Image 1 (cartoon, rainbow over the protein chains, first blue to last red):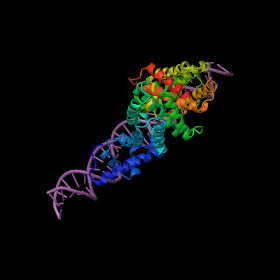
Image 2: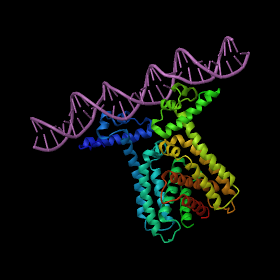
Image 3: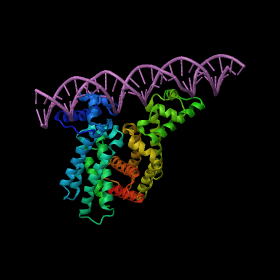
Image 4: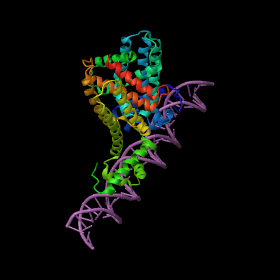
Length: 197
Length: 197
DNA sequence: TCGTGACGCGAGCGATCACTCGCGTTCAAG
DNA sequence: CTTGAACGCGAGTGATCGCTCGCGTCACGA
C-alpha cells in the first residue's frame, strides 16, 4: 500500500476497489483485469487507485489474499476444534470443512485456482498449507497409534497435499461418479489406510 | 493453424517459432510472452507468425501441448509396460516414471505449472489424467484383491489425483525433509494402504 | 526456362495498457 | 472561520500490444 487511508471515505474507497477487483476478476477474467476497468467498476477514477495501491498487482494480491485467508480460517478452525479427537470422524470433519470452504464461492475459486497465474497464489496457498500442515503434524505426533513409520511432519505433508488436491478437483470438476459423501469416504479411507500401513 | 506449411523451409520456421516460444516462456515468463518477442527470438518477422498461427494463444498452446504430451507419454508407457504386474513394485515404478518425467525439465515445469494461467493447461492436463486414469482403472479392475469397496473408476480417480499432486509439489518445492526415495515410499504406502483399507 | 503460388518480410495501425499529474473539493484540527 | 492536509478526479502520456498488409523473393511443376 502506497499510503494508509486515514479518513472514512478513503477507507470505503479502498473497500470498493477491492470488491470491484473481485467482481472484474469473476465476470471478465484475469486477462481483462485492467486498472481502468477496476476503477470504472468501483465508480472511482483511475488516479484514485494509485493513491493507496502501488500498482495493479497489489490490488490483485489483496483480492487473492482475502480469498485464501478465508479458506484457511475455516479449515484451521475446524481442525483446531477437534485437535483432541482421534479416529476417522476427525478426518472426515476436517475434509468436510475444506470442501465446504471451497464450495462456498466456486466462481471465485475457479478464477483464483484455474485462471490466475499460480505464482500469484503461491505464497498465500503455501501459507494455508503450512498452517494446516503444522496442525496436522502436532495431531499426528500426539495420536495413540504412535511409532509411525513416516515422521509426523512427512506424513502431514503427504496427507495435506493429497487431500487438498482431491477437494480442489472435486469442487472444480464435479465428477458425477463421485458424490460428496463418497468423496469424504474415500478421503477417510485414504488417510486411514496410509497412516496404518 | 491458419494454414499448413507445405515447403521444407516453412516447416522449419514453424519449428523455430515453437522453440522460440518455449525459450521466451522460460527466460522471460508468461507476461513477456509477446508475439513480437517470440518472432525476434525465432529470427522471424512478426508477420510470418501469423501465416501459420491464428493468434498468440495458438503458439502458446502448441508449446504447452508438447510438454504435457511428453509427460503423458512417459507415464503411460511405464504404466502400460507393467499393467500385468501387481504389488507395490508396480506402483513404485509408475510413480517413479511420473517423478522422472516432471524432473526432466523443471524449468519448463515451473513456468507451465506455476506461472501460466491454468486454464490454458486444463485440457491438456485433463487429457493426461484421463489417459492415466483409464489405465489405472483397468489395472484395478483386474487386480487379485478384488471386491474392492470403491469402484475401480473412483479408486483410480483418487489415486491419480493424489499421486499427481504429490509428485508435482515435490518436484517444484523440493522439500528437504522428503528425499526422492522417501517420496516414493510414501506414495506406495498411500496407495497400498488406501486400496486395502 | 518460365510462370505461379507459396513464402517471408517489416513498417506500421489501432487499441489498450499501466500509470501520472495538476487541479478542485472535502475534512478536521485549532 | 481559517487553513493546510487529505482526498478524489480524469484527461492525458508514453509504451507496448496483437496483428495486418503490400511488396519483394523463392521454390517447383511444366
